[in-house]
Image 1: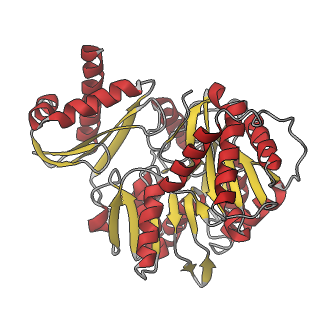
Image 2: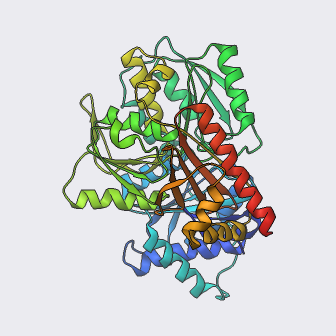
Image 3: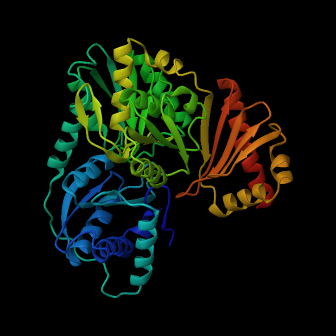
Length: 477
């Protein structure tokens, strides 16, 4: 079975998760909550899902399993993860989201939320231990799903109201904004939200077939489509999200995506953040570009949440976080022009999209000009898909074995002058460029991140980094 917890939730092959496994992990989650006294028997639990083909069956199986142990499942349908999480937080109930986020349709996953928010690493261990304990229990099986209360419309309406209250009406009047709809559950909500703010909305690329969109490593095919759409429709921006709507994608008037960490940085300034928590993979220029304290973590929303909660315990206010994929999290309440924004400590694509569009409109700048004002080092990233986890583990072990191994591996790109091993290996080279190797935490992918003096140098360094990874795999089998 391929199931394991990664950077955000349980992930694995759809074929491994469909059936008894989804009942097992849903039961383990529910039992963990009950045994810890976090919820009482008979409590409601919210169930959501994305559009990938296996998600309805997994959601139905999980709901039936949770009902069997005394919960009252509520069907929230296909909707963005932050919408489900926001309702759970507001009502103090647990929730479960069936989604594989940005990974291909042959894979899927489950994200778990306690009544007080997204689970942490200790919760993951407890759920995993409970699942192991229950693995041979004959009482856990695939029950015939019952019909549960359908509260999709109510859940969506509540989240839309939250986002509509963030900006003045008609702020985006005169703007033409494309929405790359593909198969993201955020597509219709984004269209309604932006048109309600006065923008002329152009729907692009809607698909009934699931399309994996990774906002941190946008494919060459997607880049070409964005640039063509921007020119054809004379767009001011194109916005989109990953499959479950917790990671934003924003492209400028030329169809060139803004990096997720830049979106987070713009949002931090828009919100007036005092403390920003972000993984080591986010741009190294963030500290110099912000007026806030920056705290670095390992990759994954649980680590960002842990860092934000630590800041709150210290009595800090204005605490938020973001990841290099653009997902934005808030731990403190914020005020935008007098309007209070309740905390949402889970990845959200809506707030960063609105923050960037509002910042552009209020400054009278194009997105390209707005981005240039931040003067960040040029960063790029990509991944090698279908890269066996055994191969990535072997590579990382080799690079960590000795400084000589690392320098020999990187000799084609430069001299090693500094190393960070917070999450993967992040190496500063002699010319102050950066190359970072990191295996994905929940998929057979090897990621490479780079920073360089200009775009051409970044592209070249990224291409060479990926080539070095492939060469190592071929040489070592």
